[in-house]
Image 1 (cartoon, rainbow, N blue to C red):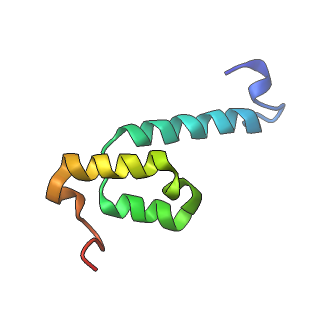
Image 2: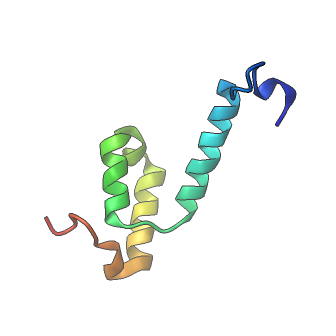
Length: 76
């Protein structure tokens, strides 16, 4: 952690938190996910859900996982 990544109370700076969030998001996008994962994103972060990168990853995951992709409310 760099010196200006935390304040005097040890709180994480907004810039560090942003970098952490980006790393978490990037790592999550590298794994294969099921229908319910994408439905959660659609509900919690619609802008992210409709990004072309997310849509492409969803198609890729569905193709790679086959029927295993179809969990949760897929058939509703």
